[in-house]
Length: 207
Image 1 (cartoon, rainbow, N blue to C red):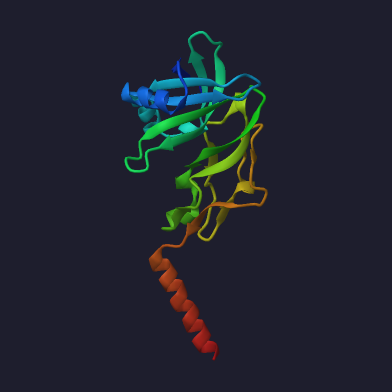
Image 2 (cartoon, rainbow, N blue to C red):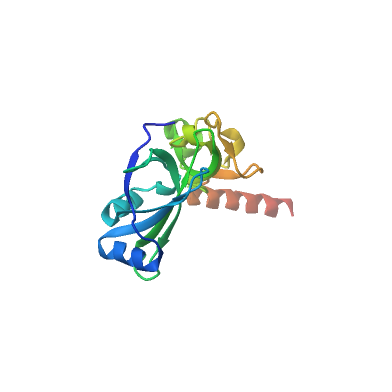
């Protein structure tokens, strides 16, 4: 697991239903529920500003949290959904699922590209075209990688970087079974135009 599991402090909500949820929102809180893990669901609420800050920081749905609720044992959870206001696009409800450390879960893990300077294709003016900025991986809850790394060393113009060429963190595996594309090195527009012209000239000479 990259880094320490962050704590998420929430409060148990006294009531349930639409009335209690509206009351929570009026008080500057976002209602939610914690479920799963062979335990009864718990109605919770957390500060709107705290949730919004975490959402803006990114990777909220791909982060394992240590949920702290007064009167309950700490439990590892992952967010399974954030409902938003259809007009304002602000969070109105959040769902968390309890996880055991050994539980497998599908998450979108960010991709980082390294060694740009060691890619001949980029030195020639090629352009790194990212097809997937993150990939859907099956990972173990107790060891969620922060990112996967794609090494661009030796990459030439026209090369395609697929998931099979990436060394994945231990315990992680792609959810999609086919060898999908993560990125490619595209020719710069000037070089492509030159290649097209040369190809056209060769075809004309052959006729």
